[in-house]
Length: 182
Length: 196
Image 1 (cartoon, rainbow over the protein chains, first blue to last red):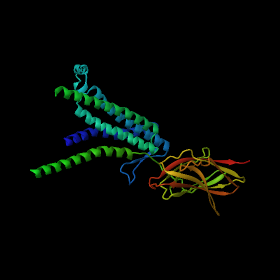
Image 2: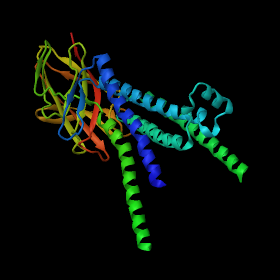
Image 3: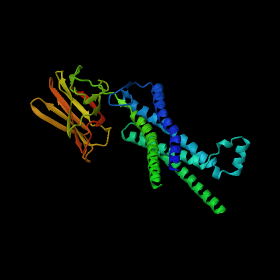
Image 4: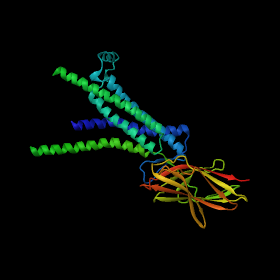
């Protein structure tokens, strides 16, 4: 059972992991391109990854802040989609009316079961807090504006509340189901 | 039978640990990549360059890549410092420059204390030292993050005609710090005031 859970978690972790890294790289590229920042890509022997070396500390701050914001935004949207599914497209507590509508539109495949949903939720939840951790670390290093970290932290609390609320609803739905059939 | 159960249990434990490690890799590696992509600031050093103007001749002394002076223009007289990888002991000296009054009149060099120091939260005091050839350096506190004692907001150094003044920064660190990651930056506004 545990190995099944772990395998599912690994499976679900691929997408957010790729999104986290790719949006950061794409964000840095876009910001440097649109703002015409002066930077060089250098390889240092002690570092595995190439370093972006800026001549201006303000440009470095701006590029890093907005690329971090894009990275957080992507993870935020991913987790928000999981929450939307858990609230509105969750097998255990979707309304009959909504099910009927989905059937009419031939969109029943959007319905999600708790097994898939909560594995996704756990992984995206972890990445959401990892992203905020990265932002806070960067803010302490003066490499990201504090407002970016504070705003992200606030959004994290809202999403965390929403997912806890849904887990609670799931818990009560299951209890009602078990009581009805015992 | 119990032997088989034990073997099965061990195999399960090993496989689960392996899966747990893979999951951890999926979480840690992207985090490491994103943190590894932190931007760096170019550490160009002016070295022992000499700058001449109508008023003075200034020779930069920072030859050991401890101080990076980014902006130093006549119209925008602000020194922009990034000090990095330097604090190998608790009292680190950073030679700044030697300035010679090349006029026949005295002038004043006025420094204003930095408003903010950027970098890790290290308790520190920063002094501007004025050194003369035959006397010990005089230290003037320009920034204080150790106690609430106020640093001088403005420091004025008179310079007689033909006189040479040597300046250096002295950083006093309180507490433990890693020399490899020590990195602070600040602006030191600076002006030369001539007297009629």
